[in-house]
Image (cartoon, rainbow, N blue to C red):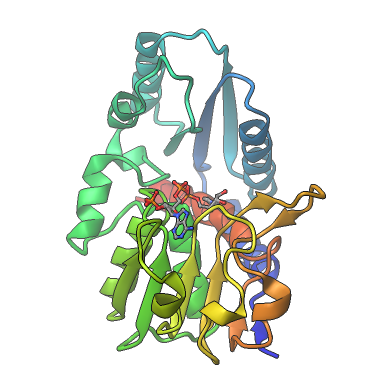
Length: 276
Ligand code: NDP
């Protein structure tokens, strides 16, 4: 059986170190999270972000706006926080209601305070190997590789999924770490043949248990980003953990793998911004 990557433990250790750093800072890092509407999943994510920020000692504020808020109102609120020295990170929780243009909102955030790393300026910096603000999920996965001594140099990494928030940034980071990277997606023909070539397999698809052991090369490192509900209402990953853990050399569980690291990296980037 492969070793299990304990994302919860790693996140707790990193958060404890961050709390010490913050305790020694005269001006505390500040993070504002803006949430529009009542999407229950988004509400949970935002609550968790606030809880973690408070635990670390980050000054945190949540702005809850009604579903009916206009795009212009949202932009002007963001502009106020761009000018406010008390906040080093601004995060607008996605998705936004349909009448609001997400691209315009992301562009409105000062790239220096874009702790999600979704602003086109930061995307461009990452593409050119000069990343400053990195999308938190891929950033957390790179930290896991570091903590578990996974060396990507010369390895074949397969990324399943090509979203702007996970798949594409993950592709860049693994490429910069000198892996040979293949990106698979819904149009990939014979996905299992592709994933079976992977020394490192990262899956961010959003389909419960899509990847079983027939998709995995023995000894591979398997990272499961997926968060799905099983028919019984249980939180499950994109990878069938029970099967794949016997084939993989290292594997993340769901829950307790990638999720806690994502939130931790958000705090890390907020603190780093405050230190600049
Ligand atoms: P998206 O829906 O934006 O992207 C999914 C990707 O998977 C797409 O590129 C899609 O291909 C591809 N895909 C869909 N079906 C298949 C298939 N059968 N075979 C191969 N590829 C397929 O999702 P996200 O990247 O935003 O999220 C993915 C999952 O990760 C979700 O479960 C989400 O909840 C979770 N997540 C977890 C986070 C965490 O912190 N733990 C953070 C972010 C996301 P195509 O482009 O062709 O449509």
